Length: 154
Figure: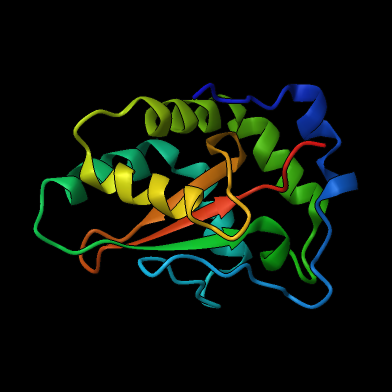
């Protein structure tokens, strides 16, 4: 499966596609996945600013016996009342790291935690491409992995 990358031009126009969700609609997901209302704008910005540490946390989680729970969070759902320009600035600053994360998710072998994430993305009511993953937040103690996703490129 090829990873569709977002170009700088697409990221610069995210403010036209990413708007706060009106009803905060969450997509239904598979059994191993939860959509938690706990993710917020600060969690997203923190995850974007710490992608390398989150990849390391995925590897730590993979080597533990902690069960993994994945939450898929649409970026639009955490934007309510927040500055879209601030998100775009962080995305533009972190674009290379976002690509590193997407490559890691796409190319990891023998990593059960990554497979659980891929299954959650693929089993979503509307499947989510790895190229839509913007950031992850990994709690190695609880096994909770929050995956922040962008809207599909149209």
